Image (cartoon, rainbow, N blue to C red):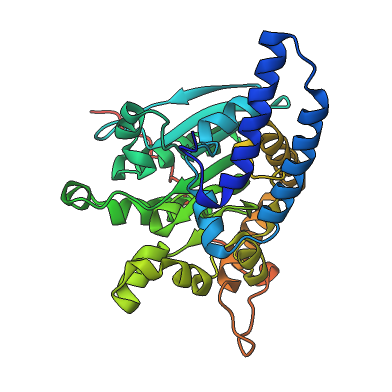
Length: 345
């Protein structure tokens, strides 16, 4: 009965199951159980507050990976008026791990790109459990350039444990494709907002994670390596992953404090997996606010601020921060007009 729930959620799930059983009895036996249901609901609220106010970094890692947590397509269906998915990188194949769309939100046209894990076993296999192949990042680049051509802002949704790294992915240039996506995003001439909705893992996350604003859901994580991998490297013991999670500072609060994230989007009490609609509303509100601010900026200021943002990451107390207005942003090359051909004699 407690399948697909985390161990620390078990006391809460047990109460919720009792509430569901009593409500079913009310329907089938026509018996008034409202007093018992009300008492259990109050108890569930107290248990929920106690559990989710005392989460460790490892607990938040588990929440970011929760099997019931909403994914990119879940949010797109809720925050967008409509969207059309685009397929293929025009070079090799269509990667299901990355969803690339043209969409509208509150009447505003935009491009939305995100990592998708899939729900069923067949979907997860098709989408490689949310770990993109090189063609996934190349598809993302294609749609970003299309958005730039059309003057549309770009939204990206990060949710991956990392990029695919099998031999065939290395052969097709996974590292190059991630680097190329980062390069294109760094100089894309439209506003970009990145939202980390689940697990932001390694280069697979940063491949679509360069933007003017980086937002994180309250229980999302962002790290250069998974806690298990970190523990295996440092202590040769992946069982020490909870300790590694503490040291990696991968939670949304830590990312905000360190300047890696620009804002934390609150999740409803109990996490996004318990209230997908409420979480989507919070995301949509944050996206609209940030889009309004970014779209109001002159293009050169937008690009200069983006450049300075990433130059400022990792500065020490003795470092000198580059100023946005002093940054010389490279311009795309202009094509020289062809000289008219001389008529043949």
